[in-house]
Image (cartoon, rainbow, N blue to C red; front, side, top):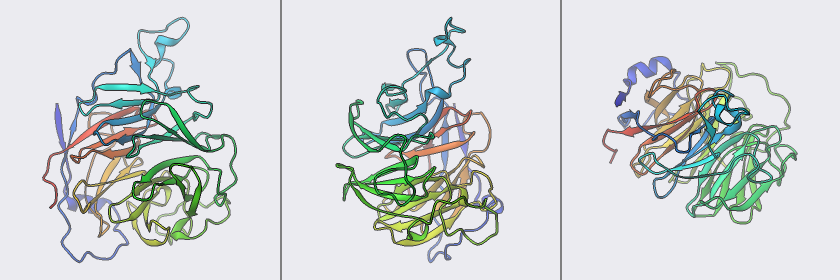
Length: 373
């Protein structure tokens, strides 16, 4: 069963405050149209169930990787492993699950005890061009990034479990949320994240520190508590917690989710500030920009922003920073969201989403409109 999800641009603009970007010099691109595929993924094997789905990535084969939190499953959700068993279902699946494009499980590995530094609260997953799988965590002592081969063999650790030293330390992390690797330079860009308030860059092979920066490309200020976001006030000069995502565009720009400040900040690869884009700026609490993804056309004309507070995916003209559409709303049915947390796109432009809190699922949204040329 497939449902079509799209709203007109005029309706969206009525719900969201405008971007602070300059007016576009060219007409805005049309909003892409997505349809939810209620049959993706296929039922999990081995009587498996999943907890909070805290990350999704797509590799070069268009295989989809989901990381979830087995420890977030409630007793009734993992009743089959209780002593004595409480119910027929279910058994917590390994934390990392690889799906083929049709939604069949290819393999799964990881989870509590899999590695000495395995995070207490899994957060984020990325598969680089060499098929290495990177994961992070945002538990109280999860101050590491772990790198594995695609079949789950440990390769490298950055950071030290239980050790952190603030947003200007060069070797220790602060509950990192997300990572992406630049193929051209072999640099790993990290949104660091839930405790620190910065972007930090490492050599992706050796883990050596290269550079870091805070909001507007400046050195992060002391990690003192920050006042809560207030709609309509002047933009914060600091990232808020969490710095929730990092994405690298084809034109060399680095896009950062400053979630609780309802904005995306854009930098060059060296950390110099370029501009910022504000999204749904009346959103309080957990903020409006949880993850971002780019459209599949060569110019990446459309920027998608997952909003786990309003439970929608905003569609923006990337260069103008203007909202042109959206899909999804709060709810439990196919195509709706509860705490949409992460997002990834395959080579065809299909979007995959994951949900945390009690959402605990992955969904696929097929791109059914033509790609921009």
